[in-house]
Amino acid sequence: MWKTIKERMITRILVLFSRWFFPAVQLLNIKQVVSHPKRILIHLPENLEATRFHKIQNRLKQLFPSSALHYLINDFFPAEWLQSPTAGRPVGAVHVIRTADIRWVRLLKEERLDELRSGQFDLAVDFDLRFNLTVAHAFYACGAMITVALYHPRIQDVFHNVLIKVSDPLQYDTAVFRLFEQLKT
Image (cartoon, rainbow, N blue to C red; front, side):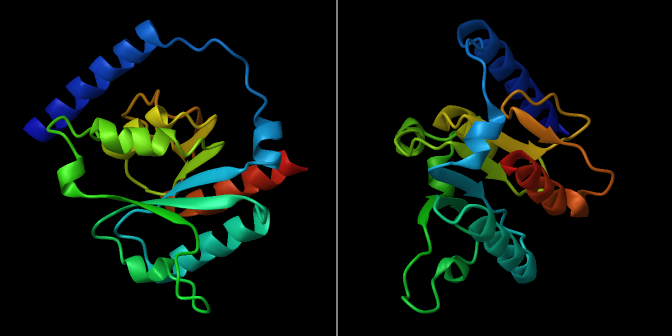
C-alpha cells in the first residue's frame, strides 16, 4: 500500500514539474518520425517470454530495417537472447538498468540518464504490460521524439506521448505494430 502511495506522489510531483518547467513548445509530425527513425530505444520487461521476444524483434527488424535498435533491459533479463546467433555479438546497443542505478524515488541516476540522452533516439517503445515509473522517466528524459506505451486507466501518464488503449493487454504488440504500419504508409 505504501509503495503505491509513494509511487503516485512521486508521479504527481514529476507531472507538475514537467508541465511547469518543460511545456511542449513544438508540433510533432509523428508520421515523419515513424517513417524513418535512425535510432529506436526498446524496453523489454524482465518477464518477457522467448516467443514474444522473437516476434517483437522480427517485426521491428522488418518494419525498421535501416534503424539502429537499442535495448533497455534490467539486470534480470536473459541477456543471451540479445546475442546474434551468427556473430556472437549483441544485435544492437544494450542499456542495462541495474538496481544500483535506481535512486530511492525509483528514478535513474543522472549518469545513466546522460547515457540515454546521448543516444539521440527518435522513437522509444515500451513493451512492458505494466506501468514502470523508472522506465517511463527514462523514456521522458532520453529526449525521444515519440514514446509509445500501453495505456493504463488508473495512471495519468505524461511521460509518453503515444498511449495505446486495448481491451486485452496481450493484444498490445499487435496494436503497436499495426500503428507503425499505418503511419509508415
